[in-house]
Image (cartoon, rainbow, N blue to C red; front, side, top):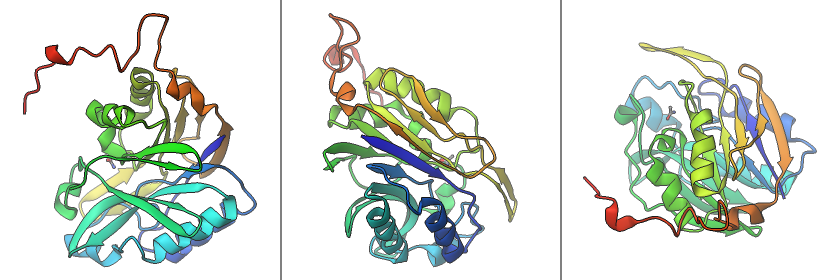
Length: 263
Ligand code: ACM
């Protein structure tokens, strides 16, 4: 099973240029799953709610069409971030496509910083989709800091977490080694690179996209400031074995009666 990522440096607002760059990088590449960054074709640093809405699309828009083309080109299930409009609300979403089909979208649950101004928080339950024999869960960027998200996806059977990101803080890649080992799942955390100075904001994105194994091993780590594509071979059946040793199962050994949930 080959899983990979495409770490890019999008030009803000120029979807066609960002599609063309991805087309060039993915030409002739093959994989089973490829993860793109959060908001990979629009850029991140919006200056108004209106601007986010103007760049947003439905799950059957031009970005979905482009990703279906990339799925046909590579043979891969593709997961990528885009601003999704639905019933006049705009979400920071990930979309999963395979061949000529949209499998699902996931609307980021935990919005980061000013995303709380531009976007509506996700309103759908976390779910896992089996495509090409791979059980895939999606989360978007800052969802990583809430361990409940990866745990829920693991409990729902995910073998691999597709994790589009636009990271500006240096913590997520390290944290994903813990997220993976505590759930014995794989993860593809795909970040972008580059700097965006727009409105009052000046963000430098930290690259270092990462493929993390069920045992916390880092299987691929991208450079911090170059566009990058990589694919690694993994044995997904490792994610079906939740035993840390002969006596400990990371899911079944949970003692939920001791976990007081405080809203
Ligand atoms: C982030 O959630 N884009 C940091």
